[in-house]
Length: 568
Ligand code: ARG
Image (cartoon, rainbow, N blue to C red; front, side, top):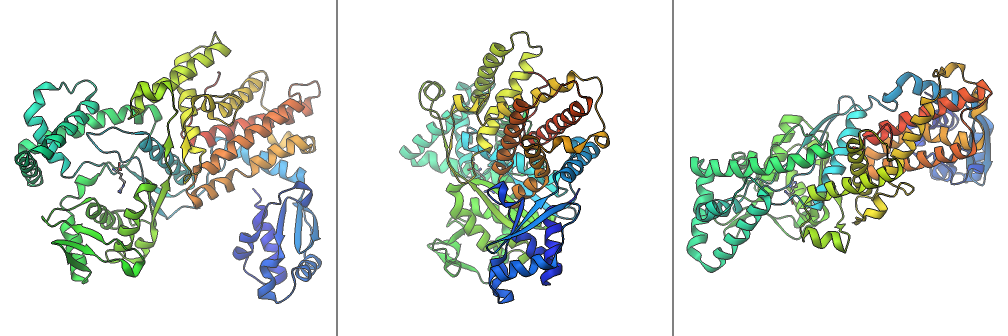
């Protein structure tokens, strides 16, 4: 399929002898359609060419020509505006979608590049909270999109399964294990045990001492402690898996913090050999003032034990060696901004520059829970499983109200409920706080997951009524050049680029926004045009457009972790 940006950059490059790639990055989509489909701001070249933008625009325009794709080129106060040939656009897009079907937009641009997406990473024996839901969904989506664009992608769940708190958990179990039946609601019970032992430790030094002892034993692989720890971990994972299954989230590796417990000495010795370790009040630290970070990174506590940061450093070393990554993304809440600044700064001393540069913290904002009934009933810590199930219940009510005779209601309700949550979460820009609100998330007419599904189902029901799918080459392309059709076609064209920008910025909200626009453009087309009409040519053209929209909506939504029902 033609790439207009490349095509235009080539033309200009030929005229001004500047590299295509540089020029490509300057090409814009004008805010209004009467300013063309693409624009080139000539002031970007004023410095290099030592001329005014207006002069540059005039000169380029004289040198370049229109062609079968570009119908008209205009200059307008230092801008060059390009108008594409709409008929050609229709042809290009429809043929490409016919060829690639549900793989439209897929590419191999990522071939040869290794990407790690680290996401979810809850702490075992503790609740999976709403912040973890956000990293899970963002990570899942980025993981899918990177894969789709051909990157060799590894998804890692860096479980919080290590640390001195497990010494406490073991002590709590020794003391009160019989009181708790961990076969039911285990996370809350473990949480309860943890709070209880913590309180006791504050009162009684001796208990605290025993907890420390347990942790030491755990580190030394003592069988009893090890088994208990494993048990806590398995119980937690069973609970987390319920959420992952509902959301259809998968990982390639569950190597969490504990995995690095025997890999930290090397970190300490490398840093030491490079002369980067300093002693401070008995602890070992790396001073980072040179990097403009005031708080030093502690790598070893005064008692010789490691901390969270040390395990992250060991993970960087391990991942560089194991995955030879080009990028390693950490989808973690903004509260940990300083932590990542610190470990990335220290990483420069541990791994090659290539790896240190590939580390990226994809930080996200808070999630505000709805106030009122729901939040009080669920308590302070929202149980994510309850939240998901409650949303699915609500979705079922709405779906049944609209379509009482629906078959496989439960399956549809599940897809709609998950879509509501996933879209609500993913359409919020990473860095912004997200507000969770049922009425907004489940509104079939709003900018929501269910609205995208609803639009898809609409395309399906149109296609159900026709006897045979027309072929793209038989379409009379000029029949789709009216305003509302061409808007849809332009959206369809933009899919691939949208995916590229989404991974470039690691921001699924860009894809989410795109799917809303495509849905809105199709709804607009649908309201303005009858699809099933007497005139066979008109019908074929509109049917094919409908098919194309449905296909791209389905593919795009799947990349956000949203599945389409056939009916709703
Ligand atoms: N387990 C941590 C938490 O729940 C998040 C881990 C983030 N990843 C990392 N490599 N430090 O807060």
